[in-house]
Amino acid sequence: MEEHILNNEALQYLDEAMFTSSLISKKERKKGETDWDNVYPRKKSETMKMAALLAKADEVVEEPNDTEYRERYDTLKEIVEWSQKRHRTWMWSLIAGALLGAGIFYYYFNDQKEDIARAKAEREQVEQWKEIKVQQTTWNACPSEHANDAYTMRLSSAQHYKTYKLIDYKRYAESSQKRSKEWLQRADTAKLQENKEKYLHNVKVEEEHAAKYRADYDSINAMDFAQVHAMAKGDLTKSVERQVSWGKTLQGYMIYLLILIPLYIITGYPHGYTITRHTRRTGCLNIFRKVGFAIASFCFGAGLALSLLPDYQVKTYYSNGSTSTHTEGNSLNIAIIAMKIGLMIVGAFIFCFVASTVMTIETISGLYNNFNWSGWFRKVKPAKQTQNENVENSI
Image (cartoon, rainbow, N blue to C red):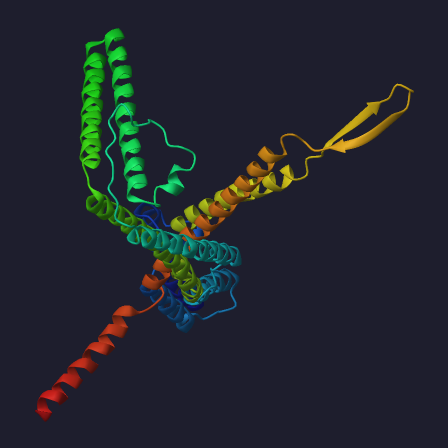
């Protein structure tokens, strides 16, 4: 009888340990039943409490080899040990995606250097313009479309640049006028007053745009060499700044991914109780990763499959009754190649985006949850206070 009472006391400690986790609802606590998945602790304090209860049960148990006690104790001990242990959660597939992304950004960053150099060369070309007398162009005499070589020739002189800008603003004004007429036609045929008012509002907006573009045209048309030169230098300086900014953006993303990879690995060893606490988030990220990788794989596979499409087999019949067979290229090869490249680029982008997104979320969570920052700051703060006191005493 005494043995039974002691074992009951030990089992009571095990029962209490089973209901330590905050995953267990009030209804389950009241009922005294729950799933084993809910027994896993979500916090360090819950894990320590569960371990302490198991230690108490181990101290008071009289018959440790009793089947009921031993099975429950061993199961709870495994849960505690798993929760206290750190587990590797980082994945090679995500790292591969980040490396691919860094490689893509590195490629485009190097390619962007050429665009930056070209923009600077164009600005230098404009700065070297020789002063000439620039002519005005009346609205009716100004073309509405650029010549084929207009974009290249615009930087050759102030006159070419002025003409290029005038054509732009005339084209903008005419486009707004065209849209204004279209909205007016829709307003005339509208049956609902609400739609009619909306269309008339759009007419007014487009007319205002057209008037502004015409005013810009007249303003540029009145410019002399110095004003056109200043305008061109300003435009080309902005172009250089945009190219440089985009280059820095590409470089920044590349550096970010290269820094993210080691941080992701370092923070990818959470305690078991941290994994339990973020089970829902991890499940959502896994779904996002699997779906994203599946779409990326489909795009890659479709792109590769397009390259396997065969050429045409053409059979030629001659007047003497003989025949010959030869292969002719598919007339849609150019479109197929473009589609293949496009699909593979989309697949690569999705693969990199999914990998970097999941890694970023996991890394931020790991930095927050896997390190005792408060304890570290408490150690640093007294050390700084002691250093300050020593300085004051020396003074």
